[in-house]
Amino acid sequence: MISGMRTFFLMAFGVGVVLASGSTGAAQGLLAKPGVQHASVAGTATPATVAAGSVVTLMADVTPNPSIHIYADGAKDFTPVSLVLTPNAGITAGKPKYPKPDVAAPPGSTDVVPAYKQTFRIAVPVTIKSTAKPGDVVSIAGAVNYQACDDRLCYPVTAAPVAWKITVK
Image 1: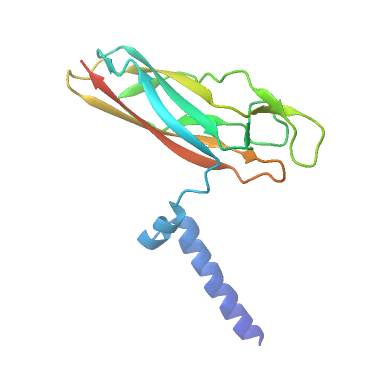
Image 2: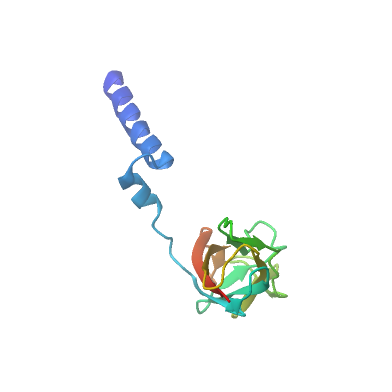
């Protein structure tokens, strides 16, 4: 019996290692699936066409689903929203700017914490490298990481992909 349990544990642990390490294509496919989204995210850029060496502002407009709030910086015991850009040799990114949040009470609490209940915009300045050539299209990808709650429960932290394309003139 113990030998059988040991074999089961080793087999189960081995599968866990394969899935966690992403060492097989099948495992990577499982890990890459997005989580349930409690908000929509749309990316825009101003201006969308710039000269090499210029600054463009990337914006991520985040709209929480009905009855959902998303935690902001300063929300104790919760993960605040953040915009993270994928490393890109064609740009230099500045620091994201977040709007002033509203407040919301977490489920089961009367305390209030900083949160967004309505559409909000995260903006980040990005400098296009001076080596970019006219006609180049700089593709920039990122993710909005956030934790959301409704009136009854809080959901695990999730990430919503966002992307921009900037044309060099």
